[in-house]
Length: 346
Image 1 (cartoon, rainbow, N blue to C red):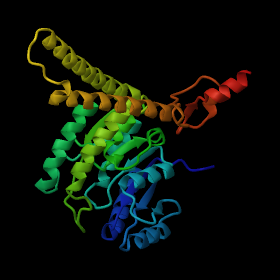
Image 2: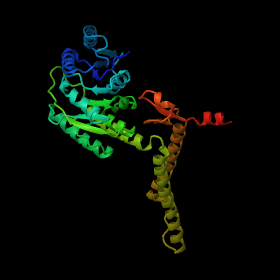
Image 3: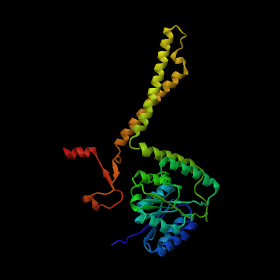
Image 4: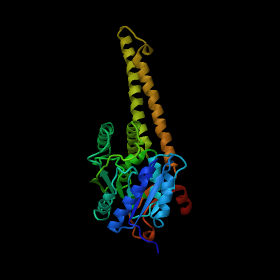
């Protein structure tokens, strides 16, 4: 009989050899005090220092399964690390935190209770008293304000590495690219709307230096546009491209007709006649027509691709009242295949 694991702690890391042993000891002390069963999963994102050697040593020193490690061949990014950590996690509650000792393991019990007793699907940390330079704090505030406005999720700190999730939540979302900043939005879009926030302690960096530079601000806004677009139009691209293309086509066409009618009217009245093609407005209208047709075709092609995608009809099932109740919670999806359905009905 397998032992029930209360908490899985998923820790992405990149060149953090100086922090790992202290972090592992800190987590173990907190868990032992709270008498919680746990596993710690270190995801080495292609470190070039001795991080993996430290992780391997920790796995040997602690009881089997308590300290685990996954090592990437190269640096893929935090989202890839979290995705594989979520896949490997077995705990009823999954906690994520950074490996640089800026996140406090002392917050784990409170986060755990908010999920198990408070009924939250996701709890995000809020580094209210953030110990980072002003050059990182100001862009972060602007980014979080934009994310709140776009998503409607009232969190102060979307990008806080310290978060807690119900197991089913992490098994039902896909984190890719740079989308780790928007996990609350991905969770909400998947149907997990019980999202909470907890003010957490934040420490100044003790070892090494930050792995993120100014470019992450630009990437953050580009990713926000992406996730917002995919949320609204990911499965129906024609709604966006088709609507925009139709409006541009009608505007350009109406302008062209107006220019032609104006020429005919001026000619009938004996007024000075200007050639339609002599006016800059004509070329602007023509460009609008061409762009409108291209946008419409883009939406049409996107719709064809979407409708033929094997993952289009995947829907998260909350619960059932029939034989499927015996299926484990996690990545449960209802698949519909029109072609197979037709064959079965024949």
